[in-house]
Length: 211
Image 1 (cartoon, rainbow, N blue to C red):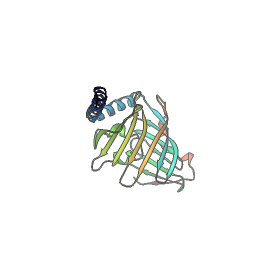
Image 2 (image 1 turned 90 degrees about the vertical axis):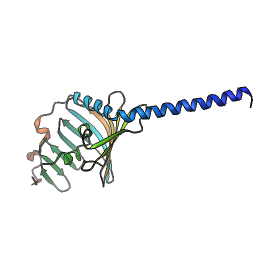
Image 3 (image 1 turned 180 degrees about the horizontal axis):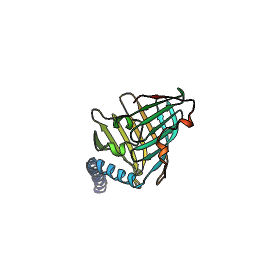
Image 4 (image 1 turned 60 degrees about the horizontal axis):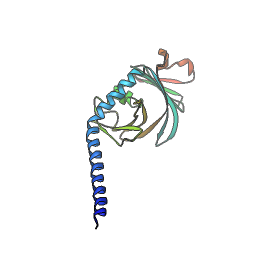
């Protein structure tokens, strides 16, 4: 092998070592940065005020589109065939096929299962966090639930510039659901009635109070 060939081979080896070092260093740094990233996302989410988020949901039973209105710990989720209202204490769960509304006073974990954006606050308790496979467009964070947590696993992808959630995958022991964000409106002004069930709008629905 002549000197020129040796230089080319040596340069190739050095380049690979440098690339490996960058990858390993990035993984080391990001392993410690998952919680910090979630802190930043939660801070931005809080600063956004009340939000309306449009999404596409995909589960074992099929896919649908919908939206969720969020104001603090209150939310209203509307998808084809089902609607949920939560005023911070009471929850109304409407299933169109049954023409029935169940009223409950859920625990924090129970309420979280019907709000895909609950990770904004729940990651600080009951979950371990680590960085996933981030790209040039988004950061990916993986939350693994401890015993008693609402989810077994949650994967969230955040826009690198705005820290807005772009994609969320929630996993329980039995079900996996994926949410892809289509729209994200901030500083919304929701009346209090947004988060409570209005019987007048559903006169034929049977209300089952399970509280």
